[in-house]
Image (cartoon, rainbow, N blue to C red; front, side):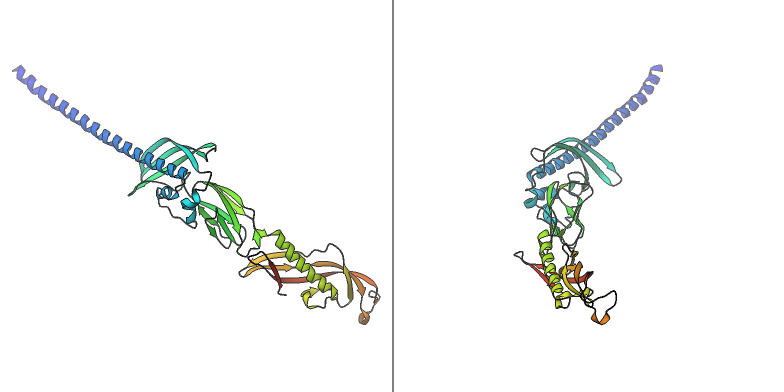
Length: 334
């Protein structure tokens, strides 16, 4: 009797033990599946990052860009081509992936990879943190990661065109958002009217802040315009402010016969660009010498023929054009 009771009690115990074993096996399989899943994702992430870094080193822009999530080429598609990128000497080289992490959040699977690399063949080593997301095409690098193209602000403080490594430009002084692959690029300002210039600069991307260029009329063009304006002023002086080149004026022509100007007069030349090209405006303020000519208005303060000094104000306006050969033409409009 007692042995039967003992056998009945043992069966539930063995059943429970069996369920425990089954549960443990299920848990182990689930854990193995999760680990395998994560390991598979980690391998895919590592493979994507390795392919991207190899493309950067080889100058293969097309392959690199294809591995970037949602890449929009923006205003500078030419900067994302191998023809331009392969000439960049400071491309990331000798890269190593030091760590890969995969996790999931509310926006879906995400990953990160730590990278060590050199900038150029002999450049110093640096580190970067890359982030990735997964879409229907697999793992892709996010555009806000280091070593991944992101908009870089480059702007000229004036009209004209900004060109980055000869591959892209914008006009009218707008901010250029250059999406460039990591590297060092030459930034050049070009004036379509060939009057202004700015010293070229180098920009290393990724970068923080914005790069500004300060274009101004080339010195030799300013010299040419100033020389022409000087000639018109001297002609005006020689004519006693009565000639057609004098333009708008404020001079004591009715009571002073001008004989000379004092050395060092300032033409106060200003140049600005309009839709049709560059314009100049000269406001020469001249110290002049002459003799009084106030016969009709003679007074104790104005004795005809007596020497006198005065200031003369002229307003000279016109346009400046430069042809393909660099010849400068200065034209009076008033």
